Image 1 (tube, helix red, strand yellow):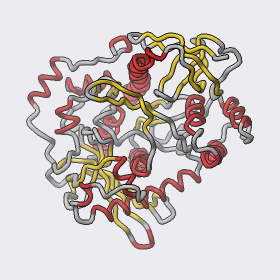
Image 2 (cartoon, helix red, strand yellow):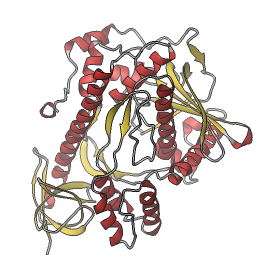
Image 3 (spheres, one colour):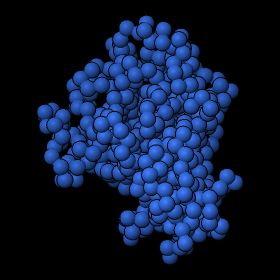
Image 4 (tube, rainbow, N blue to C red):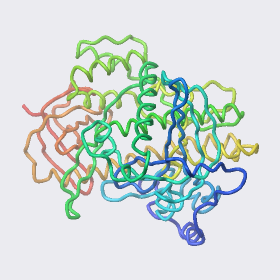
Length: 471
């Protein structure tokens, strides 16, 4: 982390500030609506305790649904310019490695005092959306409220129950009305999904390596899988982040937008499509790419994650930019939206905390707490640190994979080319899910090509995994 400009430890001043914090932020007064009676729930990973958002929904007339997303009010505990804020501003993100999580904020905050923990009254920012029967956000509002999480839920168990493949999760069963509440949320999320797909949002299924431990020993790196509950949160968050961007624009306030520019390697994406008998236009077209991906997933679901990974690599990385009111929006190519920010995970990402402060200032009729020069510099810094965090996570994941693969030197694997640059050619194998360098036989290969490789060398400390193209 230090090599990549990230601080693994909280400085003494930040720890002193932490010790002086007496409790969670107060949520009283005229500025807060009392939404505690609603059936709020959180849905996250099994092990997650840094709960950034809750959701609840109700059916309206004409088939519409009112969807509310509550976001933890982190700013009320972590003031701008404070030592804790300085650490968050320096790292800009939590770093999730296979060995340890390095949170952006101390765990006493992110998993307790600024977390929307089950059964606890908390201050929040609420994004209140009306989703029409055809999946369009037809009205929206943003305001402060006090909320209580009635059920802490996990993706996999909720998804299994929604799909009729598992029992009702225990936290759902013990709260009257929560089962129907989740059904309402699921229907609204699927309606939002249909609209996003129709507008050209890219449906990509990428495999992220999850560390699997047994008795404290790492035994595998397995891919996490998408499911219906993850989609529920994903589409609610996309909608909520769009509403926040539009809210700040309506208040003539600046914002830090999340953008994904038109891909420079569109030609290679076109070539990949041709290898499976599909034709894409010569000029970048998000809707055409989306339709191509849908066809490929339907035709060959088992190979779709490999295609998705290749497309993700060719699309390039997202970035943060300053959006001044009245200026044209750069948009997000992958989501097929013009107005998009990050505002729903302030415990984990500094751009979301920035958005929260901008929204609170706009609600109070105050000037933005940051000038344009500062916001532009912070946007660039957040982009750079996001990349650095990804490098740290990737390096530790490679060390974990190298440790698992060391006894298997000489074995052959099916592989996919995931990267080609001046540093070399990179391939991924599936069992365990790991990426390494193709040190022999890389001539003529490009992203998305499949091949057979042989493991030739590992270096656990450096996270090196070397392959040669098999005969």
